[in-house]
Amino acid sequence: MSAVAGTLAAALDPVLFARGLGFVAEEWQENLLRTQAEQVLVVAARQVGKSSTVALKALHVATYEPGSLCLIFSPRQRQSDELLRKVRTYYRALTGHAGRPVRNDDVPVKNNESELELTNGSRIVSLPGSESGVRSFSAARLLILDEASRASDDLLAAVVPMVATGGQFMMMSTPWGRRGFFYELAELDQTDAWERHRTTVYESARWPEARRARVRASIGSFAWSSDYECVFGDTTSQLFSTEMVDRAFTSDVLPLEIP
Ligand SMILES: Nc1ncnc2c1ncn2[C@@H]1O[C@H](COP(=O)(O)OP(=O)(O)OP(=O)(O)O)[C@@H](O)[C@H]1O
Ligand SMILES: [Mg+2]
Image 1 (tube, protein in one colour):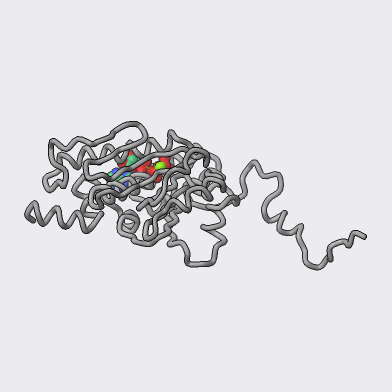
Image 2 (tube, rainbow, N blue to C red; image 1 turned 120 degrees about the horizontal axis):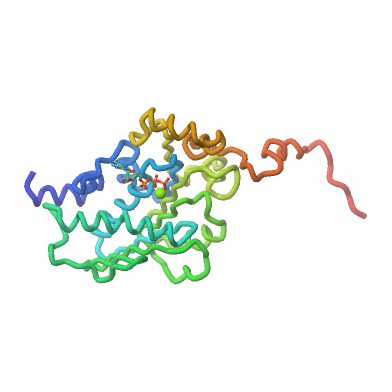
């Protein structure tokens, strides 16, 4: 393939773009890279490549959609910065890439812990998990909420309006018990408002049997089923199991009339 054809192919297909940067996506990662759905929810195991995949997606958007804004949220600024660091690593590979859309002398306009601004005007910004101080952003082409099961309802409420019309909202996480919006959207919501993806440890090429066995032997069964098998279980900090709480409610008893 000629350099021009290669660049065009990478522009049209984020999977080829990622491959050009040395990242050969697994099937579930291809689906995430290619999806155009407006709302995407990913339940996936630890260390399967959730953050790397969305980092590449953000870089693809920033590179080929001049002036676009990608926002990265997670419960802590440090985690958001970490995801931005992955973007930056791939960006460096991009500038040295044969069919690159970025010239060799093309240095980013801004390149710090929490922001990467390209010469085409696109910005990728990493943000903290507290809703105060993040309200100044709007019209994001791509909004990422990483480690979403641990994010607060307040954060969700603050970020939802920041997604541009026609933009994409992607949230990803391991489960963290039967609580919070991530659990509700992943397990209880019956609508098709969210495109749902799920990758357990058994479906990931990063986790061959020997590696699974090593980790399985060193952690408790709750952590294993939650973090690796993607089960939304009752958390150890819950005094009563969700099942017990559900059983305590009955429609057979009428509420007391207080005179
Ligand atoms: N398709 C792939 N090819 C090569 N390496 C990959 C691929 N997918 C993921 N990795 C590698 O797997 C490791 C974990 O990736 P990443 O941090 O993105 O996973 P994660 O699911 O976000 O992890 P965590 O649960 O810790 O947040 C990284 O070293 C990343 O480079
Ligand atoms: Mg991650």
